[in-house]
Length: 421
Image (tube, rainbow, N blue to C red; front, side, top):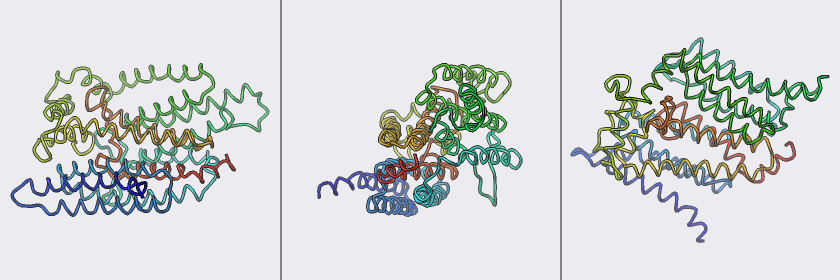
């Protein structure tokens, strides 16, 4: 009995925080805003129904969804405070994300030979990159958006997942993915395989350079290096790839104005406070003005921060909910990555181990990149905070990742994977 109650304590905490937050937003003005309670009800209804299904049907790791639900709750609450219309759209995207979560869970389990689709993981991203370059729209300096019937999508979000699956297929039998039936010597086969691994990785990065999507470039290369560090058996190959990052970064700084500006405002944003450095300066002012406990929901000025609902939502959270809440958000991401790493450690199937580790690293590195950027730890890259920032394609993609992690976390399915691992 106590075990069953313990299952629902985190869910009760999520419900309590949502009710308190939206009640404050509803009654903070003289004219009561009952619209806030409708948003609260919709969010909690989706969280409750999804969590009950996960626990009753024994979908595997249940804490992943709880952690994500808390992040979603904080994010939508902050978005509602900034723009209620955007919050309603985010709730709709949350519903789409939940559908994608369950669909990916069942889809992943039904197809039990994911490691055999290497060509798909290589060809589809190239096709999506080309479509984006031809039909894409430039937003905030990056040509990575496809607009269809008024809805905008970032196809590179899907490419990140496919790239992790490619890494899984490659390192499942390391350096033995390509040309195994050829007459080349074993040494030449290894060199060819490593060359093709680097080619495919930097081909993805090259397309992203053309799109000026520097955040995704950094994310993809970091995941690649971490996977290489963990699974590669040749330190010289790892050092070679690490060494290539420096000339790549230097070329980007030298020949791309967009990169140079971001590095310069990272070094000294005060040289052009009202121009290039305005975003990061306002972000720092917002975080600083909130203090440890924040100004209170609706009582700060987060709208002074550009892109407060997307790139700089962490700054807005720190301003009105306090630095302690910001720390809590970071800890939630750490817990999410920890639970995913724990799943990876318990999996015997090498392909799934790499996929889980890669997807967890992707969420963790994306969080580090965006939070590091808004607090001036590293240069800004323009990525979104997973499950928190406003954005349809980002949220749905994050739910797809969650669905894959949820499917692999199911113990009996992971054991079955050994049959084809």
